[in-house]
Image 1 (cartoon, rainbow, N blue to C red):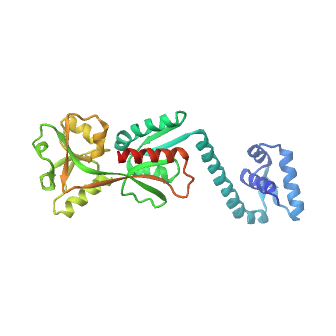
Image 2 (cartoon, helix red, strand yellow; image 1 turned 135 degrees about the vertical axis):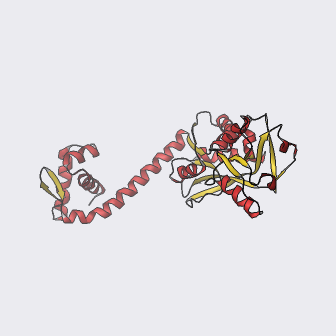
Image 3 (cartoon, rainbow, N blue to C red; image 1 turned 30 degrees about the horizontal axis):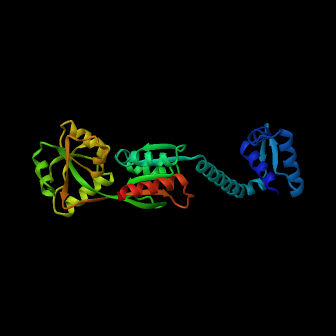
Length: 294
């Protein structure tokens, strides 16, 4: 059987009628009927039986169904890849990142990228870390900028920036006079931070516990370090956040103090595994890496 015959057989099996198959294939009904009839003559057996106004595949046709599903599943994969390659040529880029990293890292990087690629169309998805990772894993984004750790194994990643955990507090706060804030000063305090299901939340809990201190009580759970700092600026307390938040340039009324001991935070760029990396994504990665080194 030819690929055209297989495609027509598959369309009739899915649609259950000549009319539906013709519509799906954008051909005439007589053309579909002729292709099926010719295939049946070649094979020496019937592929369909008509009952109740519909075509029903014969047992012989049903035996072909698993193979047809595999063949046309692969065709769909090739079609998706062609769309991605077309998007590369047309200059389209989809980026996923948590809100803090969207605000702290992407504006400067995308501005530099726009100078180099003025016709580039960019879509930025601001999402919780876990959802940003999932968006890239599902190939719904070309590149992600996220916090470690992440558990999705089907991703490539590149290091971008080593940040650190800091305490964000009003400039007049007593702890703002410290060069660094010991963990014991924060143990059992009420703080604003992201929840225990986030990379930063888990890092706080693990670090305090490892040094023999009770983790701070997260009295207000914020969706991001950026949101936590906005709450501190409103006088709602102090927060444990990513130092990258300082890059947002919105918090001149706050002090950011490192913790003692130092708590590192790793930020990485992620890509779908075994995916043709788009030129815009590769360019953005290069810009982000230069930005981090500067």
